[in-house]
Amino acid sequence: MQQLRENVDSAVQWLGFASFNISLDKRTVIEFIESPTLTTWADSDLEQYLRDSWADRDPLLSQIDRKDSAFLWHVEDWRDHQDYYDYISSFGLCGGMSIPLHRAPERRGAMILMSKCEKPLTLETLMSAKILAHMAMARATSLSEKAGGSEDQRQRLGLLSQRQREILRWVAQGKTNREIAMIVGSTRRTVDYHMQEILAKLEVPSRTLAAAALLGTESSG
Image 1 (cartoon, rainbow, N blue to C red):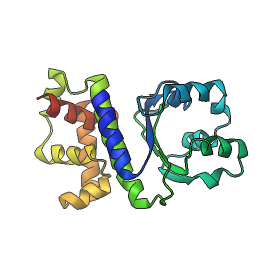
Image 2: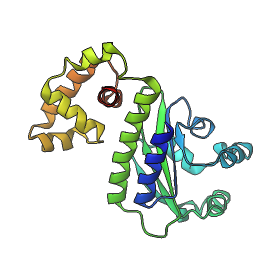
Image 3: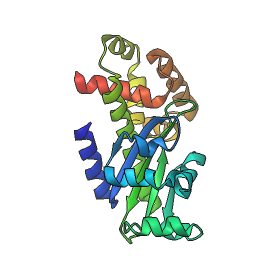
């Protein structure tokens, strides 16, 4: 996990961000701060955040809780929340983005990236960060749950067809079903069908856990 954190941090820096926080499979968004899965945020800053009760008045955390899609933000967006504007400005932050990472019903997850650069954050950067976020989630899931470590999981992966394994590898790289259909020269409906078959064969509830099973098996074998 430490190596994964360092690798993600390098990629985050390359994209132009100063720091990140990944939290997976949380019951509430406050757990993003209380027990992050991977983060470069200092423990002292997280503790101070909790002591100052920011979770109850943090507009960014509130948006993350409501939104189901990735979004960009700029420090000026919080001018209507002067206390929060002053708080994030004190860290020299100028913007960031949030990427939801859902794994199971009634659970929350997200990657939050912070930027100190005045360079505008673009949709291209957002797309690159989404791929990074989903790859990091798949690897973290593999490491924390040992998704691909058991012989039983290997046997289930053996039930996948060559095309299904190809589709699953693209899923592990953060591609949507529509994008995968274009890459493999198939229809969206066919890829949707294959994904249903993949989940059924692996006996997992989400595409993320399916990708984690593949990554875990290939890295350990």
